[in-house]
Length: 607
Figure (spheres, rainbow, N blue to C red):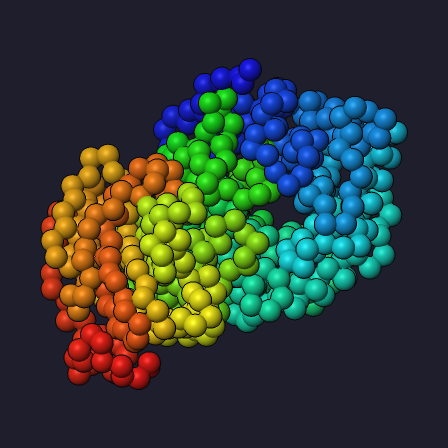
């Protein structure tokens, strides 16, 4: 039977170092029995077996507990963790984790064990018996020498294991660190941006919470760190900080974009890693404000399971958005955000006052990431032209949408049939039978400027779509599509969703509106070739709210060439009214063919 515990209660919003220490301890309180109920490790099921899920649930909290110990904080559960580690690395024990090998989830968790040995050896290493130390070191060494890993951020897991072994006097594995750092060097795309792998892999949160974080830890934890590598890592992290800050809104919320979003406040881990490494990429008060506001935003969300542990989900428990590698303990990757707890109270990060985010430009292009970030209208929005790895569950929603918002979130698909299940917010859905729907997965080509995002995509080999996304003021943008099809198609295009409970909605001709509380959302077909409605998407697909209302445009497309143009507006703190008319033809990024006002079906050039 699943245990039910009181959910963590954080009282007044945390601000001081001591406050954040208490937050971590409150979050750890439901772990006192260490997922003693085995059934909790079977749901959700994952690509790896339950004994590896047990390993993950045991060690991922160490991302926060090791910094707590390094900073002088006390946690009463260390003996339980040591017993679990001793058993998990003992081949003769029933709770043995198993051998770390090629392409193995155990390598992921070996990284946090190495991190903990380096940061808090007095809690994890020194109290172990000599035989237990030998088994733990041997297990980590075998993990560090794994010959084959996914060609992405996984290359740095052996580095973390190696740092831990070296810190406790164990002999290093020759060449491990050098090979890993050399491979990761191939992922740098300029300006501090990393792709999570070679070629055109996504630029998502794996840059800040993995590739940057692990390399920054290398600069602080490796006793013989290469001076040239250290300088390069720090310089790139400082450059990236100036870009990454644009993914955050004034209230602390960050863009829900990419995979592994159940790691939640790991979104703030990069800011803590900068502080831990002593990289003042932004003024200390700004850095701390970015970090603290994001954590406080998360503490206001209902992210807990009935037993008080962090659930799989985003702003509420939700397995539709999860990955095939998310088990009960997976969300504790979020504890990477607690790295600043290792810093002393007198460190500038803690000694300074939080400062607000400097007022950003209204639009900020990030061509390396395929994003044009808009600030204004009460939230931060990314207009996107990204390509996803198709192995990621719900990849079209996590990478392929046109828009991602800190306040309005986004949806994933909940099923294979019907537009309501396809998660149509922020995208154009196309269907040749009215039942199976396709959206953008990959960009055949793309470009990003301050005036527009342009991408060409092929939902079928014989159907071509060119999409332009044009910023049009605070919380507003215009979408232009040039679509060429040899057969009839159905189309659905969604704006931004709002919570259904308490929503006011309306649709009239080519325009639809939905408002709930301070959230206002609208979409209008400016060429008047589609009909607007307010759709009620299937529940639990949206990342922020289980039930939503969504303004959409529906249309039928005959064989041939078509222009589709939508005025999309979403604001926070409005009065629920409809947006003022927009002179969309005056937008500087508009394709030339539309400036003179062609008929909707006039062929015209594509740029």
